[in-house]
Length: 209
Image (cartoon, rainbow, N blue to C red; front, side, top):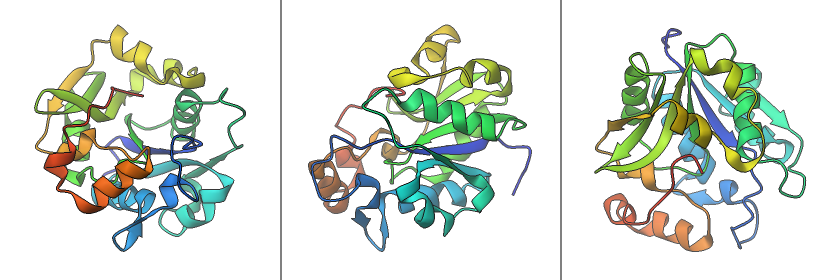
């Protein structure tokens, strides 16, 4: 593992409230793994440090794949007040000495390891970058170390949108429709299970939800 590369921060602390099925969306089976398991496997295959921000119900399963020191457990979200901003801030704080951070939602199981490496490489040139497929913005989003103070101040549901606009985020074009595909609903899950990734990419996904 190259310690000079950014840290991949996988966000798995959300409520997943749009998923109407039984159990948390990240624990749903996908092939021989789960939605979150597939996301973690791709992140680990990129040969960078992987840090996961989660809540206690998911922590045990995550520790079976990621070192305990790289699991940040947050209190369960409180009535919508806690969002992606809180998770990003916690993850960046826990990896404060990194050269940068790649933010990857845990519900994106089709992202390729090569995409993570491509975004990491571009982050050496620009302070804010994001994966893009056929001109459409997706994840992961990368932030350089110079944005540390602003990242750890994030809170609520805003995520990092403000930083993306302020620093003129640069795209990294990749041959990976998985950067556009997340699992929010039961319908999403069935489509991921049954369809070709290229077909799934027709569903739009906003940058840094």
